[in-house]
Image (cartoon, rainbow, N blue to C red; front, side):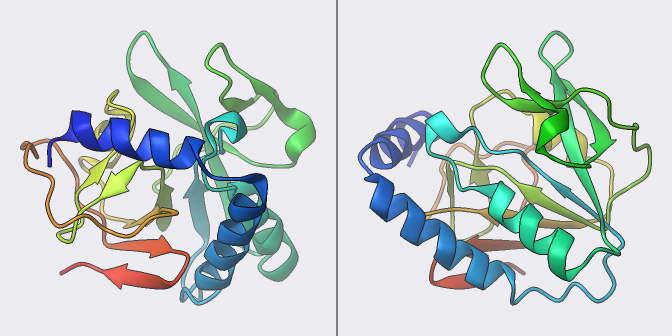
Length: 187
């Protein structure tokens, strides 16, 4: 399937989810997330959910991490839509966040992070059985992940599609993807 068709299909699927379904799916994602081996993770980069887009609620994961793994530094992105690059910041709490023009929560007063995170929780709309993903099409995460060696883990309400047909050279494969019912690993 082509990225543009997948994008359209998944956005519609998410739009059709009821609040009860979203709550249930988010609880199941958290249960799967808790199964990850975090023993060697010192820094974890995680996207901040756009709630009105019915994205998986990463704030549930962040709250669980802060309570159960306070030793892990949580890093969050801030997007520059002019350069299509992201900068990265230490997360403290929701009070430091403001929505940008696209309704994406972003840190305001947080300290910059300039290292390489041990794990990155990557946003996506869809993914295939090989570990390729479809995002919103701006390429922020493909550019960010291009030259770093880190664990790349997607987060999706829906299972993998068989194949994304228009994968290109700059698309970065995931190492794993968390869905409500399982964690899929890619070789």
